[in-house]
Length: 241
Image (tube, rainbow, N blue to C red; front, side, top):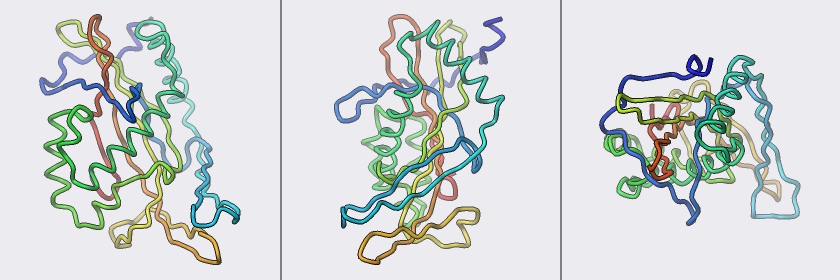
């Protein structure tokens, strides 16, 4: 029964590397997270401006209907990870860590600080990101950055368990993030995204656009291997596909 639930791949890319992800001098535990679409899990996140602490905090609400099959399948994978790989695994802890990682890495991408991505992102992916980001307009580069307070919603989902020809074991988790940006972007290239007007106090408002991003995290669980995670996939919808 258990073997039927594993997605087995004959071989992982030779460039697949695992790196310890340390953020604020704390090890970020990663797990496999899933994509969310407009209309998946109900969520709610408050955006607030530090300009005026006396004004009520405006709210941006992300609402959705979960896919029952994906929800049930990922719960089975979480159980398998706790049973066979890491008994202290917590998807809630991972989700919080993945959010921090997303904010940190997206900030580095927006500043084109690719050398700083080493140890956080797979080596073969860094080269591709450098190529793609280098050809982006400045406004697109700035819109890649997602500060922690601008991340409206984070959701885990699809999980993969992999074995290679040498018997090494891997777990991958895909995450999707929704975040707000005030960077001015051309409407003709942002079709399908939503705009929000956020009150920032004293009658002032600011237009913000809701964007999405996908980050994939992988870790090797072979005995004797350090518990290191690496980001192996990065996509920012409408910006960095």
